[in-house]
Length: 147
Image (cartoon, rainbow, N blue to C red; front, side):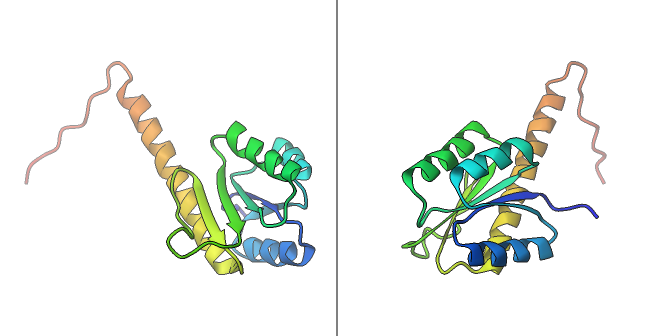
């Protein structure tokens, strides 16, 4: 069975990590889990990751830096940041490959957000391919017949 994509979940709370991973797997995502930033970096180097989901609430500075490095060094990677203290105007603002979700985390809302990020990525990829194709010498648009 094909999966929707690879999700790297960085969460230090084992119970929440398991609940979120299970919810994502039920939605046909391939889930890779890490409890720390360095574990996440290792997985990102070895696994097919499309989405990074990271809980920054309790992460140490070194974990935070590892996650920032992941996001910066992999521009194709879409990122969902989970943290305390977000109000409704910021939560789930999907733009530029990033989304923010507040706590308590609702797995269904996370799945929706991941779906939106992947749709954004697919649209961006399609647009880039179309632009490259149109720039190819000899490309011409098909004639449109009027009716």
